[in-house]
Each structure stands twice: as structure tokens, then as C-alpha cells.
Image (cartoon, rainbow, N blue to C red):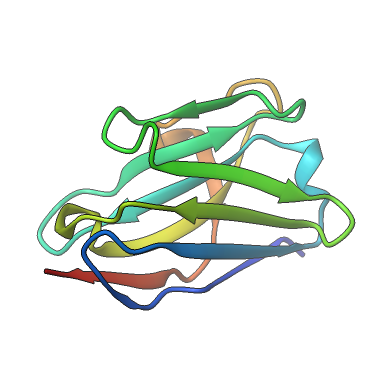
Length: 124
């Protein structure tokens, strides 16, 4: 059974940093492309960053240079390091498993397994 569990969300000040974790079970994270998504109140869920099986990653323009995705294969865990946080980064953050190993997509429709989310709130 595929399961994804996010953690690490918190309330932080503008300019602060957070690291989110996504613990996976029921599959190996390097067997699929994986992604981080976020959804702010009243907005659609959007792709933040995706990583494919070989480590190739794609970032949304809004987070380039500030966010970084990584994996710990031994722990089967995906991470999202977020620096220089802004109020626009306030959202529920989700990790997801792609239908493909090859395509690091930022499209929600390319993913079929989701975690329950972890809340990130950035205050000024």
C-alpha cells in the first residue's frame, strides 16, 4: 500500500527557512518521479518542484533559487528545503507520487498518490 506522510510544516517569519519531509512507504521513491505541491486558501493546487528517478528536478519559477528538493534513499524520504520564505509561500504543502518515473512534472494530473499535507504559514 502506497503511503506518503508529510511533516515539518510550521509558522515562520518572513525570510525564514523550513525543511519539509515526506516519508514514503509501500514503494521506493527512486522508482517514480516525485513532486511537492502547495495549495493556498482560495487557490488551486500548484506544483512547486518535481524530481525524477535520476535526480533531475524541475522548479516552479516562483521558488527557483529559494527552494531545493532532495532525497534520502536509505530512509525512503523526500525533502523540501525552503529558504527566504515569503507570505506568498503560505499554503498547505503536499508530496505526491507520479504515474511516471521519467517525467518530473508540475502538473497535478500526472500524480496519483498524495499525502495529507503539512501547513506552512509565513508571517511578516
